[in-house]
Length: 317
Image (cartoon, rainbow, N blue to C red; front, side, top):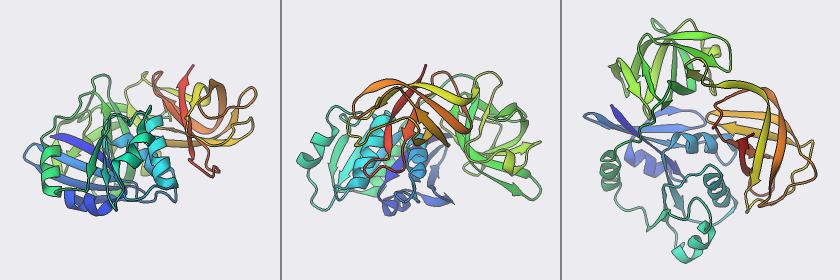
């Protein structure tokens, strides 16, 4: 089953018009399926109280829908996060008399510059039909599945929910649970309540696994083929601070590093100070290990910021 996953910001009412509420925690999924296609809409339920759900939702969605009915710190932080995470596909729906002239200057020179601007929400049914008609992006390569939920199920054992980041996950396949050394075997696979023998990239999957407890395979773990990820307790990054960030980065600051469904605290160090728009080499001592491929970007965050808590993008050295 081909699945399109969207991130929708600032309107769970619209999300409920597009699909039926499914998994709910700090992020909430809304699902719709028809024949061999499915749509999943993910909303950051605990945002803006917590930053991590926003980053998780943006990571899961291949495209972003943002409802803008005001211009405040939350909207600004969402735009910064989309820019830092390179979300170049999206639509802003303008509500409550917000105009294109007010918004378009904020997008200039960012990843959002090519986003569409729409007056009002339009017809949710037509929106859903257009989304269902799209062909999901295919990402080839070794199997990699990011996990966001896990729980015990009587008669099945441990079940985890996640998204296939790349490649194909197959029934009976053995995978490593990163960042641990443990391995597990896929007992069965479901995609939108349908039993399947395999699921390709972009699919929202439920996996019954063998040889792992829920605590072994929780939020932020990655099921992947051996050798494609490295486990790191320290990060050496070339960091580019977002041009809209207000603050000064200094050595000794307590930061968080985000990648995929991982959101890990650490201590930041660099020579001198860094401000908006600057780039330089930085080092982060992580509190717990992080699993990364060599090309995975890292989003640096500072939760004590009075403006955007999203600082910038780090590329591994």
